[in-house]
Amino acid sequence: MLSYLRSERAFLDQSCVRRAIIELGQAKYELAADVLASYLDFVDETETAVDPNTRLRRLLPQKKYPAMGALCEIGRPALPAILGIIKNGDSSELVRENGLGALINIYGPDLQVAVESLAQAGRSSSNKNDADRFHDAAWSLSRWCDERTIAACEAAAQQK
Image (tube, rainbow, N blue to C red; front, top):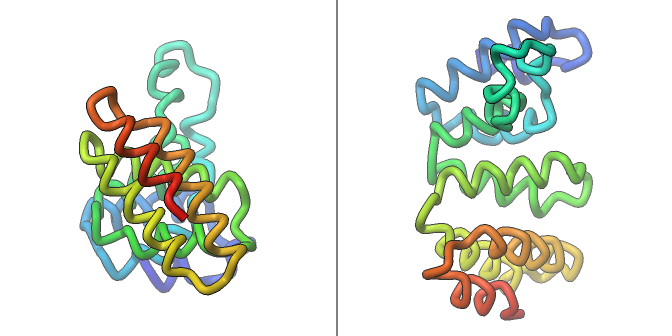
């Protein structure tokens, strides 16, 4: 499955891509995290079809973007792959947003840890553009922290 996803995307069958992404996530296959992160913009067309019986389901981004759900299933071991797509200047805004969405789901009530990790990655980066992307991501993520941790999240995101 992993070698299939590494193939030229334009020539892959969309239903096979969807199945491979879902199965790698269900298997919690950590070695697939980098490849799955590269699919954060892959839209599962079966989840976007208009069907009043699945309206709520279509609102869940993990369903529309199966790579987000797969990274969530892998959990915290996927963090380096997600940091990589945030750092990458070539990553689209959608890929970065879906990476942050995965972090929100992975860290849940411990979201402050994810904000601190992003802020630390920004402080550790020797490249100003990379550092700025990490700090922007930390700030965006801090808005999702709960009332109990919002002040600490914002403080962590502001540290440069």
